[in-house]
Length: 173
Image (cartoon, rainbow, N blue to C red):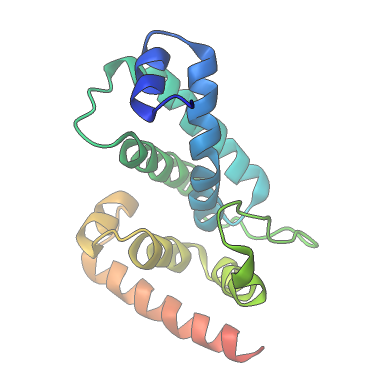
């Protein structure tokens, strides 16, 4: 019988590395997807995943379970990715770099999902970050403004621009 998330959490909080490895395996796909979408660069997304799970390991003993572990992990992944995003807003796909398999999208979404993901990656950095946080991750504009150190109106404007650009990119196909 597989260990429950609660059991894994308790064991990991006590320093059990195998329990932490199982939590990592359960969450790495989602963390990578968030990082990839925000950073649009495979190496930086991998760096964000490593940094996120380093933070999880360091902060796990203080995790009190007031929210679901998956919510807490998601929050750390977004925060870590945004920290890296701020360091270099200009990251773009490298020549010849293809969209990686995000590991959680059903195969039947296939080509249409790939086109959407590719179009998202083509967005300017700020518009991409706002679009991902608002449309895909469900953050309100006020919180996005705080996270990205921009005005709430700017967040809304970047989202509107991102939608326009996405429509243009997708109409090309």
